[in-house]
Amino acid sequence: MMMHLWRRMSILWILGLSLSSSWLFLRPPQLTRVLRARISCWAAEAEISAADMERAKKEIAELEELAAKEDANAQFRLGQVLRKGRFVEQDLIRAFQLIFDAAQQDHVRAEYVLGTMLIRAEGCEEDVDTGVNFVLMAAEDGYAPAQFAMSKLYLTGVHPGGEDALSGLYWLKRAASEHVPAQLKLGEMLLKGEGVKRNETLAARYFMLAAKEGSVQAQEVVGQLLRTGTGLARDEALAWTWLSKAADQGNEEACLTLAAMCRKGEGSPRDPAAALRWFEKAAKSGNPEAANELGVMYLCGEGTMSDEAASAYWFQRATELEEQRLADATYGI
Ligand SMILES: *[C@@H]1O[C@H](CO)[C@@H](O)[C@H](O)[C@H]1NC(C)=O
Image (tube, rainbow, N blue to C red):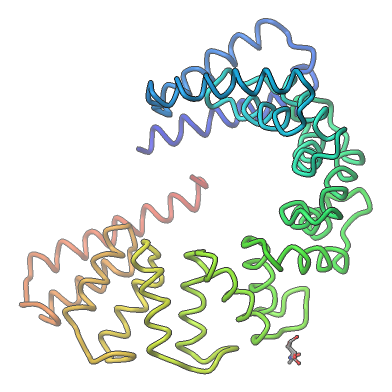
């Protein structure tokens, strides 16, 4: 697993490194060959089934035909296929050309993707000014991911005009009316009073929007807000509902909170055996705090028969998981 991840990252790194240098634009044959070998190896690792590959080939052939007839949507989709290189050999230069043609025909998503390609020098020379203008076009046409991208450009200062919190916030608010990542970001800023006046009520409203769209992270936050009565009327039963939605999808924080609630009898009758099950779920997905709590519960016989061997196992597991977390934080894997 680790090895697999590492290999993937190194491929991305090599791609990233080559793409940001202008010599890929000139396509020196040797480099291209090396990259191609890497990419097809990557595709094999992605384990695409023969049936999927067959279907993709057929769709790509259809897209080629439509794109040749100047169909903007086909140009955009074919460009994306070539850009991602999942079912075909990646070809950023042709991808750029196709997406450029679609953008010329006012295809909004193409405008946005073309803008990001120009900013990142993907299949073209870097041109931040023009890139930002294309992203802006898509943002003004109401495309929420482009609005979110505009906010990031301003908030991080990648925008040629430099950092601009006010414009960043303007675009973030527009994006947050429908775009989940923007809702999460704005909710977090409002909750912390970071770059914006602190407003828990408004923060809760954005997290609720995202939670209803199915964001697991937002579901956990909404659960915590309801549990503590932050920005929303305190409601333990409703907190329980949202937390279990998140926990069922593997959110570790939600599992820990539910376990704590079961232990105390908060939002439902006290139930140490259920607490044990929630801790187990979190520990199995790699949470050291949960493993540690399991060690304690097995030692004291809380929610289970006292079991020294199980207790020792979980304490040991907690140490391993903690070490792994430290290593991950250090090496950024
Ligand atoms: C928070 O936002 C809401 C909605 O915009 C507003 O009605 C309220 O006055 C704000 N609260 C504070 C403390 O600024």
